[in-house]
Structure formats: structure tokens, C-alpha cells
Length: 340
Image (cartoon, rainbow, N blue to C red; front, side, top):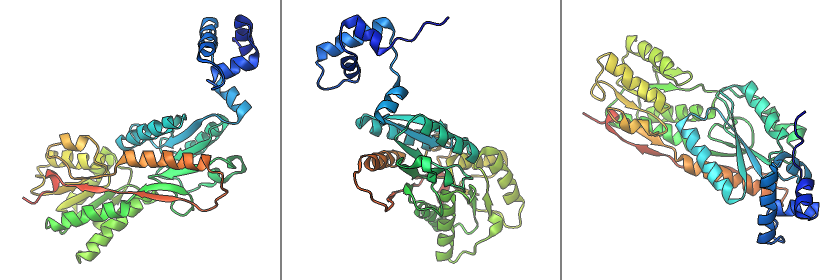
């Protein structure tokens, strides 16, 4: 038979205090002296007491936990955002519970249920590439739980959100390549079901239009931005009637794949082909050549998302209007797109 878990009553018997005083001491209540807190915590350690955060949350309706759902924690952009969110939440005395959707809308829905079951006080979400149905965030069980979307946000749903200036990012990259003399700029993008890729694509088309360069659908590809898919797109591009003189890849993973493809196919970069990526993660500076990319300032987005969710939690006003924030971008020009 397993040993019974140590309870607050056991600690009360050990130190000769009331259960309520033990509870306040363990939660660092300001009315309990530091001497008493140390005495109680020492007894708790001696007896092997484990704090039950879920039970405490059920009693107080305050877990001080924010749930975060991200597509993949391995993405450099997402890992930077997660760090920033966690650091900001800690200044409020809150903790972060991180879940990974693996780009699955069905798993994303299950994670919402899981986080609600753990009594989170709010949700911060960066959607999957394929999320179209956001009804899970509008169910009665979500009542009173604020939700902030960031980066990948609903395309046709009013919500609290913080996004990057993606249209401007797509526009600035394409404009830069046009200014280098490029006329056939390929665009390798993620699925347009995802808000960020839709906006970057719109920025790409706007720059082409301003420079009177015809849009050519044969130079545009939409798929998950990994090495394998990018290689397939490059094969099609360089087997086509119009060979690109530049490629705007919508993330740095794809841009690095283009550089590797060029090395393996005797395509000189930037002489034969100019390349630009997006996100400005650490890998683009150690690539040869170094890759032009768009800085998204993930620490600002993470900090903004954390502040917004806390403002919503702490607000006493029943404000029905949604808050939309936009963080800036900056084009970082490097060797991969330079005029030779």
C-alpha cells in the first residue's frame, strides 16, 4: 500500500499551529512573519509535503498560470517569443504552461481543453498553419478566460492580437530585390491559410506592381517551409521557361535550403541568384554567404502578448472591443542579395 501524501494538517500537527496559519505561511501571506514562514517551510520539507497547485487554484479560482500554445517550440522565432513571455509574466508573479500543436488543428483544440482543465487564467496562442475553425475559443467553457493571439492569428475573426508588420516585411524584401536589378523574383511561401504568409504575399505583389513587374504565378509556391519542399520548388523553378534571378523565401529555413540548393547545382549566389529570407534567426549570419532577412523583434511580440493578457486579466471593465497591436520589422541586408 502506498504511503498517503503529506497534508497541511500533518504540518499543523508537527509545528502546533492551525491549518489556516499553515496555509497562509506556505503561500507567503504578508500577515505571517518571516520566522513563522521559515519554520513552516522547514517542517514541510522534513515531512515531504508537496504543494498541490491545482487544488489551490480550485479553492481560490486563481492559478496564476497562463497557457501558451505554439506550433513548434523548436522554431527560433517561437523559442525567443516564449522566453520573452515567460520573463514578463514572472514580473506579475505568474507562470507559463507551454504546449506544442505540431501544426495540427485537432491537437490544438485538445490542448485548449487540457489547459482549461488545469485552471489557466488566460491563453496566448499562435495558430497552426491550417487552423480555420476557431470556435473552440468561443465555447461557454471559455467564458471569462481571455485569449490573445500572436503572429499567426485568425484571418476572419475579431480577437485580441499582436502581429508583426508582415505586409511591410514582404513589400520591403521584394522592393530591395527589385532595386538590385532583379526582374524575375520567385516567392516561396507557406500556406495562405496562415495569416502571416497571406500578408507577406500581398506585400510581394504590391512591390511588383509598383515597379511595373508582371506577377508570374509560375514563380510562386505555397507549402510548409522545410528543406525538402524548398528543394522541390527550386527544381521546378530552374526547370521552367523563366529562370528566377532572385528568390524571396518566407522563412530562414527555406532561405538556407535555397543557398544549399545553389551550392549543389552550380548556381552562384548572389551573382546568378539573389536570396532573401524572413525571421533573421541566428543561422543566417553564419551561412556563407550571409543571408538577407527580416528582423521580427520576437522579444517585443512576446513582451507585448504577455502585457496584453495581464491587462485583460486585471481589467475591471467589461470592454467588448478587441485590441490589435502591431510590432515593427526591419530588413537586414546582407551578402546573399547584394548587387555584384
